[in-house]
Image 1 (spheres, rainbow, N blue to C red):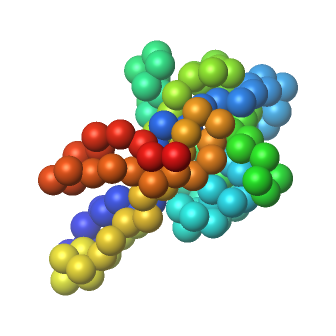
Image 2 (image 1 turned 90 degrees about the vertical axis):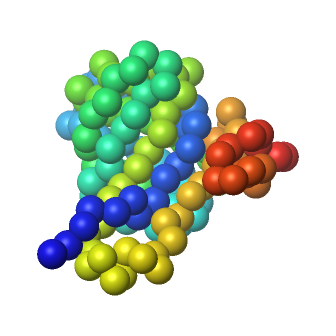
Length: 129
């Protein structure tokens, strides 16, 4: 039996642009992709904290260190410039692997720059930096 486990998360990313006239996907700054262990064309689930939309799409590599988070195509209807997102990916693994696995958790400020998070008992208290 395999379990579906959180692989990575970019927490509270701000949409920098929305491009309706594109095939569809989400463009993510390459630095954030690396930090979250995301690959081009990898499936991601998007949770929009601004409007409660949830959708699934795939990652397109954005220019490194630009902070770009751009929804494309139909996704641009679900998340618009200025919206706050949680971007997650999942993986399959055995219960034994899952018991020791640690997901990549990436916290960002409103400019999509990675920051440290202050956690108490596993709960986000505030972002530092």
